[in-house]
Amino acid sequence: MNNNTIFDDVFRTMVEKMTYLLVPLINEVFHTSYPEDVKIVHLRNEHQLEDGELITDARLLIGDKVYHIECQSTDDATMAIRMFEYDLVIALESRRRVGRRFFVEFPRSCVIYLRTTKNTPDVEEVELKLPDGQVCVYRVPTVKVERYTKDSIFEKNLLMLLPFYVMRYEESAHTIGENTEKLQELLSEYEDIRVNLEKELSMAGRSELYTDLNRLTK
Image (cartoon, rainbow, N blue to C red):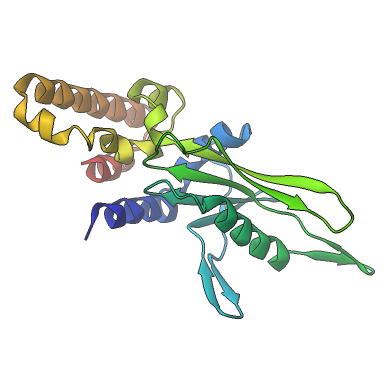
């Protein structure tokens, strides 16, 4: 199993078994203010097309709003058009009809980039030119995990990003392994994360979540 598959599995595990961890992320990206105990409904991720099946990472319903989240291990220059395709399928499946008029609403979507390059955008965009000359831009915000320090993760309660924190050290892993001082700094940082995580979740009465997250973070 390669690293990408491991991180994909970690994301799916959190979506399925720790769904409430997505609430602070949704609040961060979409500037909402949902409480952590807000009711979340998992929606079907499999979408049947004429030429096969399309599978999304996470599709959730909060109130009357649909949220679609994709987790990307690496930068993908085709992500904008992929997201447009996903969201168009989702929107058409939930279309409404009043008389002869159809109403199609796109989900609120974002892409979580576990790794980024200098070309990874803050917003994925697709420009649409309609037959009557109207031009509109479909936009999807991105979340770049490496931009969040351990302090900002705890300040914003973005605990679901913790299992991916180690990825920022991938390129320097060999150097760290040969440098005792740098290795000790890394170990100290992770000990700090462990202590803060235990404190945060103990206060919230979620000791079982501490065990699960601590396992996923290692």
